[in-house]
Length: 430
Image 1 (cartoon, helix red, strand yellow):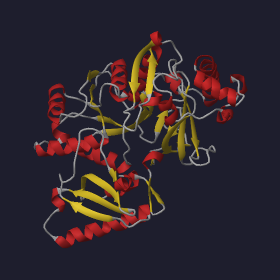
Image 2 (cartoon, one colour; image 1 turned 90 degrees about the vertical axis):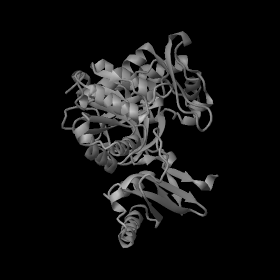
Image 3 (cartoon, helix red, strand yellow; image 1 turned 135 degrees about the vertical axis):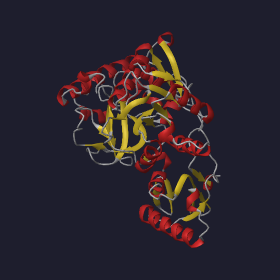
Image 4 (tube, one colour; image 1 turned 180 degrees about the horizontal axis):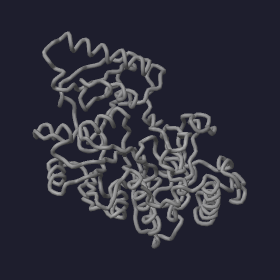
């Protein structure tokens, strides 16, 4: 199914011609209205007309998270304040937040991209869509809400947490689709078990859209198995509208990034050199239709690659492979680079492993992984636990090149929350 078939199936030459046109319009906009970029372009002696091909985008300056924080609150605003109709910010947990302004056209366009994404995964106006993401300054709730309404769904703005209420809404209104954190999906499954409910039989959820935190293919499969639904990986970030930047279609073989709205690059995060399709590096994005706050070459710090083959669905917008992790999340332990998702991929491959784990780094690079097991795995046979512990250690060592300490603990032993999961405690920085 398509929401906007003409736009989603543009021939590559036509799409790339459109990208150049939109990029030049964006460059004129920022040079005329955004002093930050006017100065950056002047320092590089660049005019919009100098960028004539997509390859030449690499001549433009990068924009970083630090840049957005340094020019907070409105240093990138390209319209009069009166033309901005919405403001979202990042959490600001590491200092000043990043503020993102939307014009009326930006709000409508963000909803269009969500509609594209949802319909590509099979959502229709007949669906009851329970939005379990946070509403407010975080983009995830409101942007997805507007897009689901545009499709025609009955949208339930449930917000995060309060599992008892989430369950009541699902049962009373026969929810068929959810937007949910992957870690909360697993937590909610445990809650249902405690209530004596069977998700496959007692709920009507057929599709789930997960995002806002990293997760592995193994986690996706586990959620699908528990709820008996299709789970789609979606990608977004506050700086680029929030959700709706990229999403998997019905084939779940990579996330289509909407290239008529965002120009994508994959670069070597150390040398900044461009990488070809198929090679893994850092995702860099440029907005192409943003009115209120255009952003050039934003370094997302997300590590991924472009899937080079065309998709069976017929969409011509290139796909992003599942993210390896975030450059910011990478742990350096005994000289080895480790992403938390590598650990999760190993743990979730063991059926005896439960739904929660915690990575602890302390002392002189001492790595401990606390792993909850399913109730059935604690069968009272110590030798069984020791054998499982050794299997997990060896598989982790093969994946991350370091032999960690693994503590197996009963289900419910580790702290849980109904928001984003905290998977890593690095006590070296305390």
